[in-house]
Length: 319
Image (cartoon, rainbow, N blue to C red; front, side):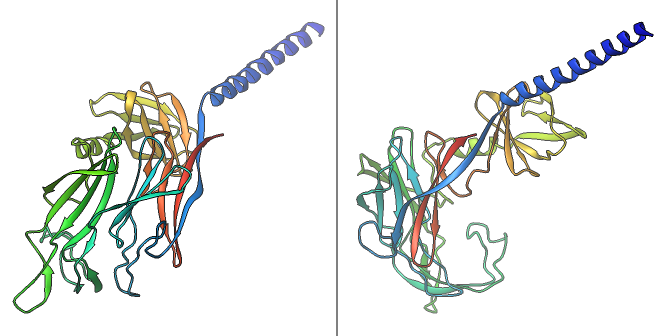
């Protein structure tokens, strides 16, 4: 009887040890995964106007196009450039949001009022999607600023569309098929060069931007069973990963530097980063939509309100 009790006690201790060791191992594994969140802070707040630190706005009411600043860029020092579209300038602020200077550009020039209804969304693709609702525009006919960007050497680029509109035989303003794009290059905030381009949605200083962008979503993600997925890389290599029961991964992933893979968890609204062997390295909060990043992976975005415009800086914080 005593011998039987000793055997039962021994087996119980073994079970307790194995179970506790599994919990400990899981805890160590969880500790090795970095958890990050983006936390917003308003660093620039400006009124609508024309003075330094204020921003231009052209809005005529419901059903009309609202022209406000929509493009910004950040250099390696954390200094912020904002395309002040309606005021024909780029405003520069330091990393704390203090106004530094204005750089003159042509970004909002010439006027024409017209309605878009039953016309292509993309003027370069007349067979594409058609606008079926009436939108009234007070549209710049000569120059419309599109975006600004900064390269790895802190050179500033400004891109605009020129001669977008023309007058037809009936005196109506219509889109000009001969419209062109123009790029301005600034070094140390001084204009050094201009050149023409075909019309583009936006300008990026890297010639490989479009190629790089196409590569981002080239990993396929397939669910193999309840708690595992298969990552299929562009070269056909397959990696199996295990996930928690409450994780629902997207069917596409981004191939990052060092062959790492970033996948969106749709259920928890987080990004999960895996190394090249499929080990989970990081769980990150959602990156702000429509923003730009600095070298420290902080994100900046523009928010326009009725009376003010705000620039938010989303700092990456680890938990």
